[in-house]
Amino acid sequence: MNKVITKINNILITGGAGYIGSHIVEELVKSKNNIFILDNLVTGFKRLINKKATFIKGDIKNINIIKKIIIKNNIDSIIHLAAYLNISEAEKNKKKYNQNNIIGTLNLIKACKNSKVRNVIFSSSCSIYGNVKGSVDERKKPNPQCHYAFTKYKGEEIIKKYSKKYNYKYGILRYFNVVGASKSGKIGEIEISHNHLFKNIAISSLEKNPIVNIFGNNYNTKDGSCIRDYMHVVDLANIHIKVLKKIELSKKSTILNCGYGKGVSVNQVVKKFQKIIMKKITINFSNRRSGDVAQVYADTKKLNKFLNWKPKYNHLRIMLQSAIKWEKKLNNINFNP
Ligand SMILES: NC(=O)c1ccc[n+]([C@@H]2O[C@H](COP(=O)([O-])OP(=O)(O)OC[C@H]3O[C@@H](n4cnc5c(N)ncnc54)[C@H](O)[C@@H]3O)[C@@H](O)[C@H]2O)c1
Image (tube, rainbow, N blue to C red; front, side, top):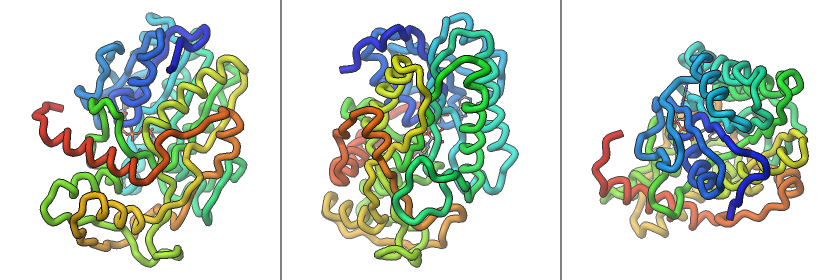
């Protein structure tokens, strides 16, 4: 499906041993490009590393490692995912998040100086928009409400700032909520510290009496729970490849929302989940998480126009089934992270 990306040869993926990164790598290795993964495995896992890619264990906080990789391997394109993403932890330990997400990104970009890198894709987040009421497009001025979002916003600023100076085009991708797993059954979300709804649901689906924790039930939404735009990780991975191809050919930078443009409430997700697993679920409502906005979903006009793109997995049932299937697989296999 993804043939050689014209003239692109060597692609570096930071965070390629993580959940989303491993799915992008799985799509990329179908091309003839050489794929290099830089990951310190802090929340990444050896079992997610694709054998067809070259893995380098290292940290983006170390600029010298990045420089060496870029020069030695003639890197021409970078997909930058390496980051910490625990919203609550970021509030408590801002310095740690600044070092990793902001300084790490700055290192990566500075390492591009005098190199052959001409395309940079950056994993940003819809959280940078802050308090929005529903659909949001890319022109909305960022207004991060939590520290994690602030680090992503700063990352975007760095990518934009150095683009002309270091002569690369960028694709800033603002992900909404990423869920599901590859059909291959080889990769999926493993890390639990991010506290993602679909992951928590999938874990509880294996229990006799599933219990699901929901943060806040008194939001100003149709059913009191938060509304989000969930996107299947394989659709998201394919967007990366298309955007990379497009910015290489058009020599134009872009910022794109990555969602399906549909708001789904947490309660709706849980109800659908009950139907699928055919078990009664006990819901534990806990306090709102600081930094969580009531509702946010993507305006996808720009994405659709830029890529002429159609999603393949945009059904709640497919996304939930995929997450549950992966969780089952994960629990039947002994593995050492
Ligand atoms: N999962 C989502 O719903 C979501 C939504 C919006 C944005 N994002 C962004 O997508 C990216 C990937 O997220 P994910 O869900 O795959 O999480 P993940 O934790 O699975 O992936 C992050 C990867 O980065 C690596 N990493 C972290 N710090 C590093 C460092 N200093 N040096 C080298 N490697 C490092 C980790 O080991 C891990 O493999 C992140 O930048 C995140 O902010 C994710």
